[in-house]
Length: 255
Ligand SMILES: [Zn+2]
Image (cartoon, rainbow, N blue to C red; front, top):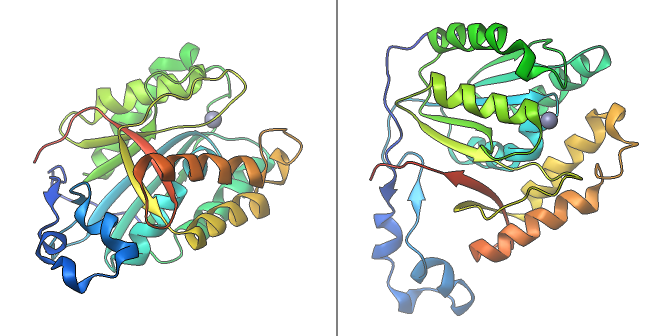
């Protein structure tokens, strides 16, 4: 396990994709026109020289993968220098091993990674708030992330909600993107930021989920078609050239 200490403390500022704007329409195949002439995009690190520092926080062992696994795979495929802190708060028994194996596969291309798996009791996060808050305070000293991925603020699972609240409470000068987790309770909303993905990346994300989380395979929502369906729906909403996307809630951004 490696640990990175950084003194840098700045949010990623969304930057206009000027490269995209300079492309002459006549040079672009028609099938791509929408992606280059449509909505102006953001990039994580336009012209950036140093590492992109990413913090992923999940309440349970498969949450990060489900919520933002495709985005992490895309980041790692596009940027050589990415540092990832991957934090699972509530894991236990065989799920510890599943979480570690899955994180290693998702982060295989990262230059630096730290995987932290805690054992806060599932379903009881609201009742262990002080303890979990203490953990977040220590986490803040380990990393100064450019971007933080965490749970959706209005998620109906209490553990997810507490995780989101403590993320915001702890990282107060950072770009935070909230990911979504589909569930029986029916709390999917309308994301306002999308990360377009290729089918290949989506397949890889779902492959790792299905390979690594045997303990979840009996759950009716933990299926390949369910994961791909949500990715496809968000791809429609994003007008993603590759048809797929992950959706996020971005409450604050700086241009
Ligand atoms: Zn969860």
